[in-house]
Length: 143
Image (cartoon, rainbow, N blue to C red):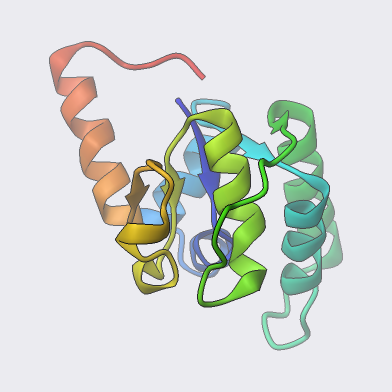
């Protein structure tokens, strides 16, 4: 399955591997989920993951970024016709629009329904539930 992953989900998944964000990060690492990304997103991932308050080992950050680039899909975002409440979130929605895939975030309020440009925006728990449903149905999507 292909998707766009907001930075907050990536950070949450690395901080706590036992919740839905952790499950998503594990699926990305295992190649079951493929991330669409662009240079702006990759730059934000790196800047946030290297913040001292998270204390992620530099080698872990390097491995995560390498995994995203190696197995992800570099995608050029389509400029949005209207701005989001937080302009820093726009690259994520722009890439999701271009890729025609869902965006997964822990902050739904940052992506108001009327500004989503037809993109499905899910919480980590919603994605994990959808993946369980398709697995039960025997229709697991390919990355």
